[in-house]
Image 1 (tube, rainbow, N blue to C red):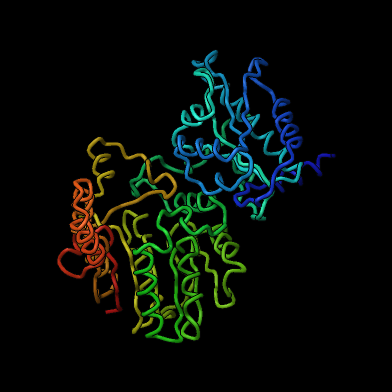
Image 2 (image 1 turned 60 degrees about the horizontal axis):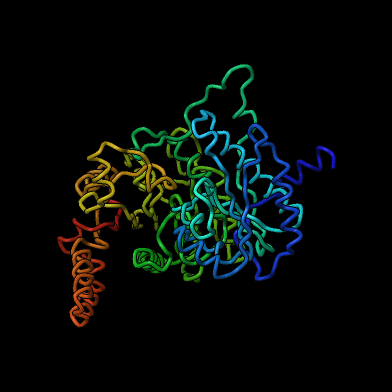
Length: 462
């Protein structure tokens, strides 16, 4: 192929996350591995090894010992485990063994595309040593990930890619603002950095709706939290039918989907507002064919430097902001914009993480002065707010708190701990009673709302 044909071929490669239940030609697998052996290696040592896993029992053992949870690892008919002997260059400052393995992995992915197969590289394995253990690899062989291989059952779109001119310098490093911070504290992040982070990370699990996860966000769509918020959103929409609803920084499009599928004539227009065209394209593509998008209008922030919702004053009946205030050290500019576009008799629904709750991971990191993204690596900056801080913010924006509901109060956590203890002691009757009490205590409007994991505010214009 000529250069143009190659570039089109490379642009057409996608990571496949949905596979058909069909076997893969063993000869095709051999050709794909052969392509990997043609990749350059450090000092021409060629110290990679590949293990083809097709046996279901072996695959289950790999997944169990590696603590891998991605659904496509179960669905793919073939797993390719990539190993490399890095012991000869353990102190190489350029990490050439890992670079070598990376070049071989990319060759594998391109070869799979050439064979008409779907493939995805998975490096996010919690316990790579478990892969080596499951496959009987020697101690010197380091596992550097798994590749899922099979007949693709999806046709995902290409995520947004950075422009060459934005990442290339000539004869000197092209000095640009730091794209991200390895720090959870929002005061370090500018609005363009937050926008770019979400624009790229939103795509990292693809666009397929797989049920158990909300992709970048870790709550299931059918979790009690999501069900409560969508129920409240539906109530407010119905009370103001036909309503114009604004979804601020869409929760991967899932709230858009829920409202479109549940609201009939009660919904006039649904505005999905976000910071980049890539995020809005993600929502559009992900929901296309799954619900009627004719009533959805996509709104792009008008400037890179500040929050500016492109809607007239007093235009919408209901505004939803689902756990997005946390991205900002000062949420007041965003809250003021939501207030500006709200009709005088409208309502704002805000779900926000509460500081007065034992988020132990955060307390531990604060104590150690370790502010790295950690478990929030795929969500970006995050701040937990005190109820008093939010009350002042809403008041300064000209909003009145109608009601506050606490979700998952600390009392529910105590019931959960007591239930586990009772069951370990064999007191199943007491365990059942505690489980029932735990279920009854998920949401509260009592004083315990101040000690809940999430607080849901219903706000009105003053």
